Length: 347
Image: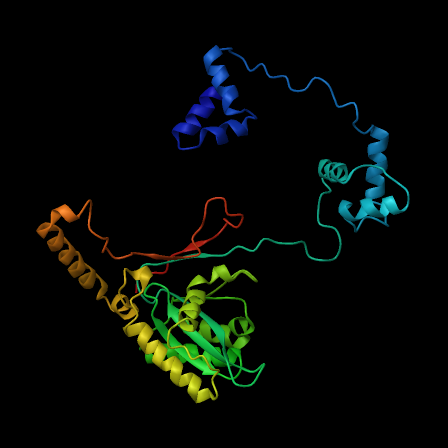
């Protein structure tokens, strides 16, 4: 029966080692069963108990101590050194955890909330204006410890900067104002757009969240203190600050900062050949010119190979469009793999 069930599971797409594990078998044991044709399951399990196991009396003593008023709010990790300070040793830390687990008492102790695993959502953009990313970065000023704050919103599908602003403070009200202005400047109905950000105050401020709800925008947030969850905005800020024209000297006035950012945004959207987009500009991809540009490049390369085939050892360079863009794609073995995958409707 076990062999039939495992064969049925594997035929349905399960992995053999995972199916074996459900029966407490190793894949090697399964191979021996098939080779020897032994018939019934002859596993008996251990026939003896460990000689050093706790007696029933010792086990009850440990459990009583764990539930005593002095220790009931402490974990075994905290209890063991306290007992040692009193000259006592009842059991090891792992044994205490095992007893609590066997008794159904292995739960978080104390008033603090138990630690939780934060998950991050996966989003897929198959066209412009489905998933945006935004963040705030510092711009150094001539006064030590004082900064200007650059707000940037970008479309992750095309990498196009959709809106920006430079202010003297970080505030949810200014972020909400930028979101409204960006939608108006692009003549865009934002309903259904996913707006991803980190967990900063302006991102989670009541004014910003209320504005997003009013506009029909779906907020999405990174895990706390995990910058990799917002990679597109982080990469954009790196491009900005390592751009050859980024000033070596701090910005003297707010107008200076805004003027430089305006020039950068124009260059980035209209002239920057983005490496992740097969070296087309963000505007080319955003406004649908990408396929024609890449198709023409492919034709040029094919003509070159036709003229001198001896100079080509294989296919020409890949000039196909890059396709969908994933924000925080799920990785095999990721401890935060319990993610909800959201693909916005095509716009």
